[in-house]
Image (cartoon, rainbow, N blue to C red; front, side, top):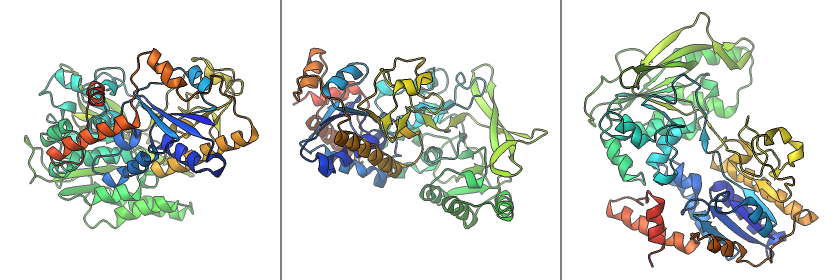
Length: 506
């Protein structure tokens, strides 16, 4: 059986790993992994925060998988552009899309896409993780961050040297990552694989105060306990939470007899057991400062039941100057839903940097049905549903009449939820579905001559220089060498053109 996996992040590798170890396929399997960038590992390389080196260790397992003679890497090959789905379907019995969720969700506020200083979490994550510049999306529908700063100010990305306060909207792990990166001492980050550009900018940052704004309550926080505990114990940080509200809310929920998930309860216990929480208001927060200084304390303010209602700006420069948040209340009888209080109660938070972190969604894959409401490809246990079963999702794109042999894994399959471990279980399900279809004879036959170089020949015809595993090892060695020169585990190469130059230098 020949399998093509599109996407070299955790979902793609976990799917490949489970297929490769399956007894039924042990001596009858070839897996080709396609990646649009010259480097593999997707979210592990470009999504996990630089200071979480332990979470990145899974890349070593993925790298080991690439040494299996049954596996080939085709980096720098964009399926859908240089290689069509129809070409893959002719060459492989099964094609798995593990393309993730690459589009950020928006707040829906007026001028959200126009004001300087308003960004998606994705913009910062791509920047400090050194996604190649050619692939960075920048703020949705407008300038990229580097160009954004050129419109005014000193040119430091994201205007980090122009404001002392940042507002991050969202109560998930990515929001915590952003807050932590803004609050961590630079000497700590200097020992990670954060990009040198980001490190230099963070060293000049004036941000001393970060608000984490969530629309619901403490029992709806989407953090993991490890991440919350970590940020609540950062040194030289004051932590501000309305604990009177937290205690009252928990008491009301318990009084109502509402069952509470153990993991959610653990998050509230981290807050309740913190030895030195301060209220949201008062004089404890550090005063604004004109220059960064390690001795100046920083602060994290965790806000519940607050929804952004509008952005404030400087009319002359189109720079955000504040965000208005409205207070919410829980719907009576439903402790998971909130609504704005009536009459409205609003508060202005003065800031020059607003970051939305309210989730991601997938993008349509040409040839596959797509559900725009969920940002996923409709599927049954990873098997892509036939177009005639989900025809309403095919209105804006071409859907192949037959989806036999097409599968999805990871966030494009289930939505952008869960950590890397959840992706593993999801990938196992997809792999088991493929094995079941193979065993039942349901997989389509390869319609090319079946030679292993059929895809390579097609790429050669198109003049595409695919990156192999051996090429990746050269890139890896070069990044490690550059990192060692500045006391870091690696210094990532920040452009596709330079990556390809390294690959082609023998």
